[in-house]
Image 1: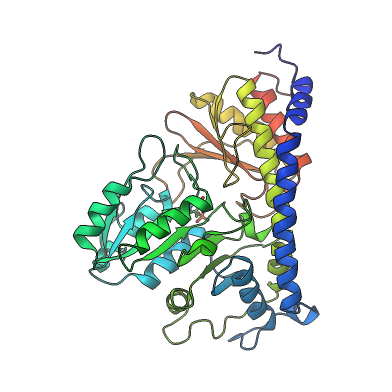
Image 2 (image 1 turned 60 degrees about the horizontal axis):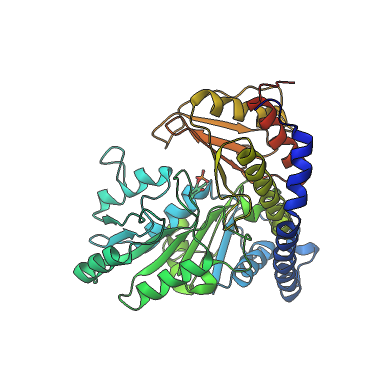
Length: 417
Ligand SMILES: *Cc1c(COP(=O)(O)O)cnc(C)c1O
């Protein structure tokens, strides 16, 4: 493998990827147009960048950004807050907002993301206040072996307990599972399937999916979508935060869980964060395009180096995650070290596997990021379990993403300089 000429391989990769890169630019253009149109409609101006304190009443920037997210995501309503600590918290707010004792949450795309296990109550200590502790039932329909939805199994469960199924939960992105990511079109099919059978809310963990296509799941009928601002929609600018968007009633219920019943979105000091959140949303379509190009390049290069990769270099994307199956713990560690060493921040740090709260296995993470843990910035992580898959994502600029990918490739080839 070490006689591979990386320079030549990269040149060939970029030549072969030219049409795909052009498509990605076109998606970014269309999404930017929708963002700018919405900024114009809502008359974004300097007054939006001022912060509020205390109760945060009459915060024009906050209210404007809420309206812009709703517009751009094709939703009736939305809220965006820097005080939402991460994606897990955004999803938790949504689930607790909608589910009541004796209701059932039906996960239709297999097990939800690792950090949600304790929220749902499929792992963790009883008594911590999981949904299970509150008497919310949980049913799971695993994906079929080809990655498609098991509609027959879901149909059985809905038929048996239609009046209790309150939330049908979809995870758009693969997360830490070796499965395909759902396209928005596919999510639309699930929405139709659910709505023709019962009155459940369709709730989507939208992490990593935003702006990879020209519409979001809310545009095809999802009742609620949630995500993290240190991933796609923060555009690499937001210092922290999360968002929830969806139908007016579902968003209202979520807002009551976030603040208080009755208070909802009536307040919430922004402390000077508005500008970075608004500017981040402006950048997000472009930043996501940079990350997508980085992912395609990585797929091409590592496939050429003999790894199983998903998606493949020429496959369309519905999220920014690239998995590279390394098959060996040392290679996974080496890969992460290569990414880390090429990063703009903390390049001298050498990542090691360690336990992370909310995750069952040890995890290794490479993240030389301006914003701690931001995975819209080039980053890579993987649970230390077979088959030792690196989940790589992000890249604020294609150029820096490319440097990271080549850094990891050199490491795997045994060239450590
Ligand atoms: C990142 C992510 C989450 C939330 O994770 P946080 O680290 O809490 O932001 C949830 N689901 C998926 C699929 C994710 O990728």
